[in-house]
Image 1 (cartoon, rainbow over the protein chains, first blue to last red):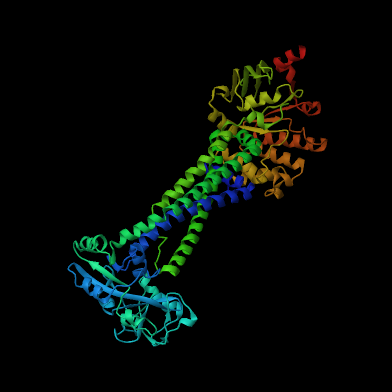
Image 2: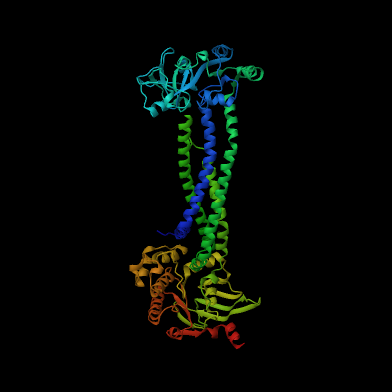
Length: 406
Length: 232
């Protein structure tokens, strides 16, 4: 119930807003939209950048056919896009045995099972490679790694969940990277293990022995020993050396190194999209500020008499001014709460789409300074738009607005 | 009344003028002396447009005089800064208006409690008692628009007495009421002021209303500005 002091201001402000409930809701919605867009564009972009870097599977570089570095990274590490071409088995062996190369795993792609890629590699990768510092692949209990010469499959956690695959299941792979009913291979594979989830694109892959892809029924026998790419970890100055050898002096293969740099260039290409979203968010914020101003100004025109009555009862100028500012603040706070919900929706949606499409695990709700700055900025804009009506309230002529002169 | 010893309200050499539409200055209030004792019930008769409301606004500290002084219970009102005048108005002065001036977005109870809040004396029990006293205990949660005209004025009376003011200023309090309601409202106002020990200064153009006060006078006798305007 009503109390003295600042509570009166809050009481009067909330009552005032209740009288203009619809306009208040519209203004809050506009603010929520602006805030949600601001947070969405900023935080999701940052998180996507971080998540893609985190999800590069613990590799420094990818060696592949001559072509785009980005395509190599997307194909080799994120299992997106088509392979730019093949490398010979000898090229794989050459780089594997190069000084400064600590890890080299060949991969071969070209088949799928219900849209999920089959990637051929060596079982050794799952035994030795750390997909994140200190984290090796783990096979869920009851399973094991595939044998390099058998028609066996190790299924990523996401695929297993989506397709309901379990140890002992059999399946026929399909040719190509997209699922076509008529492109079924005759080969029959058995699931021998399910990998624990890693939150990286490898969760979206069915791993089989590299020979499986190379020798799959219907594949070109002439390329039976080729690999699509080689995933590398390097030591010392090997990166510079290999970059010189393959990219600057050679013309047979391309080395995508460093992976983080290649990804950064990818995100730089998306800057224009972020800019567009930012401009939209600024425009929405501007509209929201105008709506607050319009609501409070209209309310002021209708409330001159009310303010005069309050003043006649002893309310100070500062009190009625604070009421108007509090209303602007409250509308903005409602908008900020709405923005949090909007961001929650955007975050969930973005995370689930990215996970679905790339296997990369976004964490849009981890703390970011923007979670603090955006609401503070929004509050500042809201209060700023309440300044003019507050000034009107401050300067309101009590005697003139109170009664008809007698 | 006039020239009383130990006056509770003392007004002297009070002048207030406004800028008229032609740019000149128009003197509206020019009162040489006026005083009121604590607990007095005083009626002042005056025509519309004669400056009565301006006089009440000056007494309440809503307007500042150009010249002269207003001393209320030992405090020089005209020398107080605005915040102090606001506080004085909230705690020591009750105001009753012709058009009631209830806050439409607030219930009867809230209207009274808001008046209390500005004086820093919120007391829900007293607010309810006041509404009970004016016969509206069953209308606590009603909004002004849900009340009859007479009921609205009773809420306004209760609100004016909410902080046990030393002085109640009533500006044509019966102007919008029918004779029956006017009579009741007036009786109630006098009763409430007597109960609270508040002095009452009521201004009205209605001879019947002012005639009911033992102590009364014509505003035109007091306000030289109006008398001169009439002579011109």
